[in-house]
Length: 230
Length: 281
Image (cartoon, rainbow over all chains, first blue to last red; front, side, top):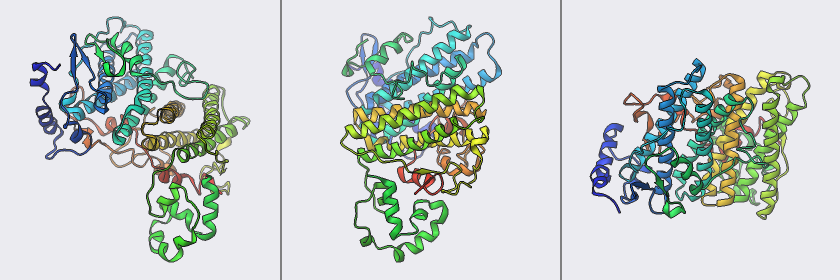
């Protein structure tokens, strides 16, 4: 179910070449890239949307890539149109978070190469970027959802290297989440809404997370092999 | 399996075990003295993974071993915060709700892990002894006086939280595909990261670990440089992420590259950082 347009813009070889070019690498990298380049057919167009594809690690990586695209786009907007009364400290912290999310996005894009889903078109029309409470409320929702998503999908990852990389990212998302929560309400960094009575962060399935993400996406993301179709 | 009883046992045969587990102390000495001082035949009983690695053999720990390791770290943290909360005049009003939240979470982690170990057919380890001054039982280590000095208390707290994040991350591959246990471990891992972020905010340092090209530790507490070593890594999955583009640049700074990815520590790395200083037998 792959379109010819995707084939032409997203072929594994082409993406791999371009990655190697901007990464400045003369030889193919080990790890993610080498493995990812072995598969080509993991993105499927369903009614104009995107599907993360057949069950497996590439689907989970594309799921993460979709969430990181969403987060990066959100924070780019936050800094481009700062809310009223944004302090210099807040601007610095939100700019750092923006840059972390951009790097997460670029990392997955590079690592997935030709297996990456396309760039997603976002829709933040429900967020009033002029209001601090609206922006930080949305930021908290994105970060908390990101943490729950990584925690909930970890067991689906089959490769130890990918799992470790997901772990490297999720703790940074949790650091973001705690900061945003504390700005909204001091001391709420591990409050009951996110942490259960055993002291465990809540987790969420792909089928729980994608409907939330899709409220901010024009390009709807499905995971038909993980029980969710947009 | 009680790792710390085992350490005790082995120390009867191998007085240098502590150094062997703590390469910062005597790495060179271990290499030269290992063969002559220790015969593997003198160690007939089953050893934990940490010890197997210390003696040069590799084996992945069992799920129970991972959980008991996690429990040991949670004993450390819960005991630390329980002592802090019970120290009159230590925690100012502004920090009380923060520290109490962290303390309660750590105590819940202890209870949860004990029940998870039992439910998995294992036996929870008992708590080892702690010296939060990092004095190895002398009470006279570099952090002496921490329960009367809030700033020092927070610095030790942060080292524990950031190390805890690294420790859980390092065990994820040993729980690969285990829906219940891996998900629980990742969920504790995320809470430890929330704690680390919050303690960093109390200390007035960046909520995320922002390393330089040569120094992982961004806390300014040089005694715990080892706990942050490796955080300066910028290669992820074979990709040097500083070569990836930023918003309006063709590359990414080391600052962003190190802050955007936290790094794991193995079980033996963590125990080497803690045993003999914060943990003693």
